[in-house]
Length: 142
Image 1: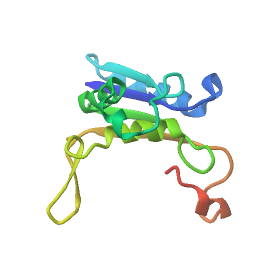
Image 2 (image 1 turned 90 degrees about the horizontal axis):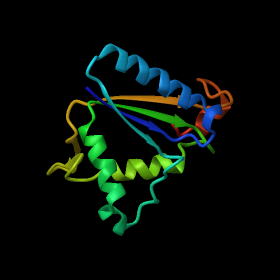
Image 3 (image 1 turned 30 degrees about the horizontal axis):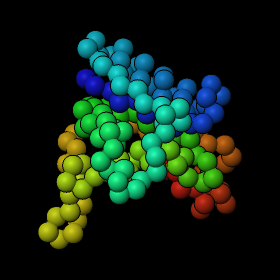
Image 4 (image 1 turned 120 degrees about the horizontal axis):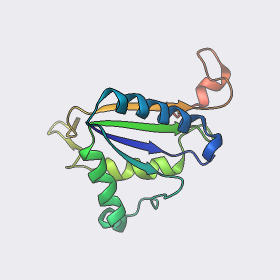
């Protein structure tokens, strides 16, 4: 089993999402003796925001290769300003590639090409965003 561990919180040791992803990855790795973990810290080594030339850059190709090689992807997604960090969005832009990880069918529907991956997203946020909360309408991380 190959586990891709993605952290994107800018708060370092104070990060709740980093604590969650570390616990999740530790539990997954303990359950699989041959587990291999690839770690990417998007705050420490951010990918540049997407531009057309960025698709050919080595960092973009490496991020896509890591994703494609993983059986399980564990993503730490803190919420900043009502959504995910821009560093995480830049990573998503590298792995959501037409013809590589998805395709459009003849009818225009989207079809996944990444296989049977397991995805675990650890969402962390401050404030109250539960059902019935006035904040719920402006929360876009989930």
